[in-house]
Length: 491
Image 1 (tube, rainbow, N blue to C red):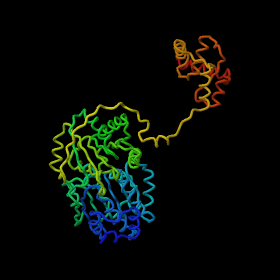
Image 2: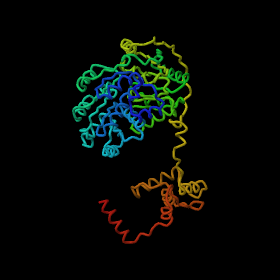
Image 3: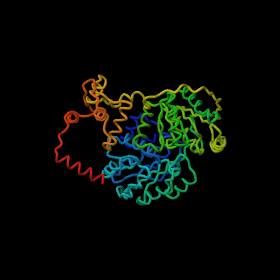
Image 4: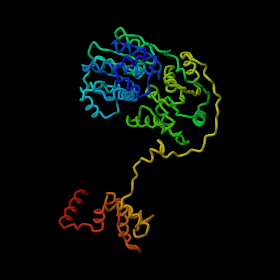
């Protein structure tokens, strides 16, 4: 029996709108137990439909229980945003509002969202702790907790934050723990938070996705960039490149742009709005290449990624599985290639832990001379460049340029300009604009221009130009006051 038939009609209709008719193995195994209210410990590879495996039964339970609420914790902002978007799709038109609470977003907007009492909160642990300290979030009526990508949250050091959040939740509670791998820390956390959980395991947690063709190429460090350009020029489709550090991702993205590649960098130092923009350009294929750190290994769900390139090998075998799991999703065939440049020990460690379904193919390096660098005007492509606002100069600026070109305005150059500047330094300490310098220089040199002399200020308004043409008359009383204060200042 199709497990989707046990869901409410509005969820079945939402799945049909998305073209989803057959549940994945993890969805078949988990949905029934979640609907019955049992705690679940589930492990499955990336791209197997884990998100809908807990969102669908959660929506069904909240729909029949108007007083129930839920908290979903995600390790990264991108993953939390994608979970929130999936919730919006399946609950469209129902009274099941959700709030997205992540770092980098406007906190005042989050205050307003929380005051509206959402039924579901999708959040990152750090921002939840922030709201709990501000007392802007109340979890006393939240009886369902979902920990998504738990192994990644532990890798990122969120264990203490998770414990503090769990302490703020009421008891008893319904807890679901989803993870791609099952290290000892996750097992310990499951024993601490879950009560008689149902164990759901789909596939091997140390085995890469089945439909990913894996390749390696051995190069020297200086050959990595030419080899990467060769791979990009000979492969079709979107490409996700992984580097070890944030600085390395930013530097590599700049280098690729110089050689004509449309690419962006994604790492933890970017502001949230920029991270969201970078992902959006990659999703809609305005940008073909994305250079990312491991922050994106669990946070990107882009179906059209055709190739994953490990420019730098990951630190652990688990990270290798998560990286190449970004391609070959939902039954599609993907390709991954890893550059091995003096780090054979890392690759041997990956081979010892990872259970390869098929032999990894060794590719001969193809080192070509680097092409002539190009300049890419808009990193997001021509479409984004057309949308930029064009700045037109003011009428006063245009008039000033006309006067300069026609010779009606005289600007001193060379020695004359140096004398004018020296005179201005001795006369007054404040800095004046270029056209006022021209006037002072003409007075000092006692030279009259051969053409009519006009005064204009670049970018000035009509009122300012009028003042320059007809300076205000200063009374004797005002002049005496200025002289008095100048004398007092010198003393």
